[in-house]
Structures are given as C-alpha cells and as structure tokens.
Amino acid sequence: MFRFSLKGLVSLAVAVSAASCSPERDSQTAAIEWNLVGEYLGQPPPGSEVELFAPGFVSTAMSEANSVFAPDGSEFFFAVWPGPGHDVSVFSTHMEDGRWTIPEVPEFLRGVSAIDVAITADGHRFFFCSNRSRTPGGPTEDNFDIWYVDRRPSGQWGEPVNPGPPLNSDRHDYYPTITRDGTMYFHSSREGGLGGRDIYRSELVDGRYQMPENLGAPINTSSNEGDVLVAPDESFLIFNSHGHDPAEGDSSLWISFRSEDGSWLPPHNMSRYMAGDPTDFCPMLSPDGRYLFFSSNRFDPKLASRDQDYQTLRKMSRGPGGGFSDVYWVDASVIERAREEFIQVNRDSPGSASEGA
Image (tube, rainbow, N blue to C red):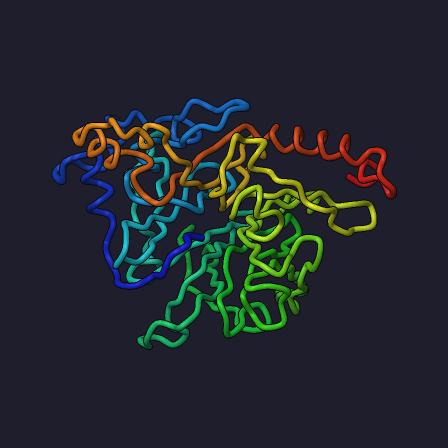
C-alpha cells in the first residue's frame, strides 16, 4: 500500500492516456505506438539486476504500486496515485488482439478509492481494499476493508462483497495475498497486535474466512510489518518491515522461510539482495513464479547533483521516478539466492535453519 492519506476523488484515465497519446487516438492505436505486444506487456525480462517495469506506461511521473497479473497473464492491475489531494485508484490493462490496452479503472472500482489487489489461483475471485461504504449510497468509511468480487459465468466481474468480521475489523485491513488453497495473509492495525501494524493469517473453511491468527514473533515486531507476499505453498514470506533492523533501513523488504514444524524462521533483509534501499514495499510474484515485482521510490542519483540545471530536473520529474514510487521487477532467482545465503549463515547454529528452510 502507499504511505499517505487518501482523500478526494479523481478520474485518472485521462491523465494516463494523455501521457501516452492524444485524446482522439483509441487504445489500440496507442498500444501499437507503445509496442506493447506479448507477455509481461512486451517488456524485456529482467535478470538478476532490478529493472523498472514498463517505464512511461506503468511507471510514470505519478506514483504506482501494488502490481498484479491475472493467473493467465492476460491482464495486469496496478494502483496509481497522482499526488496529494487525490484518491488512489486501481487500473487495469489487458490484451486485445495480442496488444495491451491503455489502462482504465475497472467498472466495479469506479468512483471509489481502491488499492491492494490479489487474485485467486483459478482467477475466479478478485480481492481489493477500499474505504467504500458498506451500505449502498452511504458515506465512505473511516477505515479500509478487504473486499472481493467473483467472476460470473459470462466472464464479467460481479458486485463487490465485504466479507465482514472476523476477516475485517474496525481498523485498517490491507494487502491480501492468497495461497494455493485459499488461505489469506494480510496486514491489519486491529487491536491486540504486537505493533502498530501486524501480519495475520486466515484459513478458508467451507467458503468462509476464519478468525485471523497473528503471526507473532519473529515476523511481527513492536513496530510495523505489512505488504506481505506469501508463496503459493506457504514456504516463504516476503514483507515490508519498519521494525526488524532500523539500521538497515526504515521500510525495506524482509524474507522468512518456513521450517519443517511450520514455524517461521527469523527474517533476513531482502532488499539488500536487490541493491535496495529503505523504501521497497508491495512485493508480488508473477503467476508463473518467474519474476518478483515490487514497488519502490529508489532514489535517482542524478537528482543528488547540485549542478543539475532546471530544464533537466523538470524533464526528470515528468518521467518514471517523478512520483512517490514506481513498479520494479527482478528474476525470482533472487529468492533462491536469499535462501542459500540464509542456510549458509545458519548452518552451524543450534537448531540449524538448514534443516527446515
């Protein structure tokens, strides 16, 4: 999730389209100009080095985060925040005749603030977070809840549903991610946690989510943890933390592997495997598990130059990196590198992590 207050409402379709094509051009023409053809929006796949994702199309001078592909890879969702005084909105782009369309807000998310998308492995249920009213026509809520829509037989999405308690609380509930069997991990600022924001787990039983379980230590701390990515088989977690080691950065990504007894092992800083900085968040795996996506406001070293002229700074502010955050991706082998180092570091320790990692 973005780290800001959400207020006001704005339509972003015009802004996104204006950044790429003139109003009279349709989305197909614009897609041809962008040459967005093929899987992953036609972007050259990254290797072990982190790459900006779809610069100028997804990653722009606005702020983007929470990037998720549909299970079949034919649709891509991401959140956009144009700046203070505006709402955050979820946009989607999909393939039409092999080309990717200009992003638009899905119909069921128009007119509301929405963020933090997750999709079940079968593609039939779409989760998001919103402060939309729980009653039709009512005022927006004071807190964000987890909502979902189901895909109808026609292929269209149905009406938004708030599953209510115990999944949702009277505090902020954010960033759901779903395992292969439907179990949900998310973060919440509900009462009874270890810190201001903790990570929770809720099992799906007979179609209903059960009382969420706080993951406790060593995952949660007395500070803030969230933006949790869980592996489909629950073998690892990648999450954002403010509290594990402030010396390594305030708000970096951390990774924990699961032991044979089901407990979570002490996490290691994940951002450093990706030449990261203190502002990496919103991790998400591609459906095929090949790439790790995340959001960051990684600082462009060019901006540090005091000799930079005004025109250059102005041009840079209009491109990727000009907003609070952009979307990045890297080959998911970075997770295995983290696992190998984790095992090596803990090999000789009592109750060696190598036995369960």
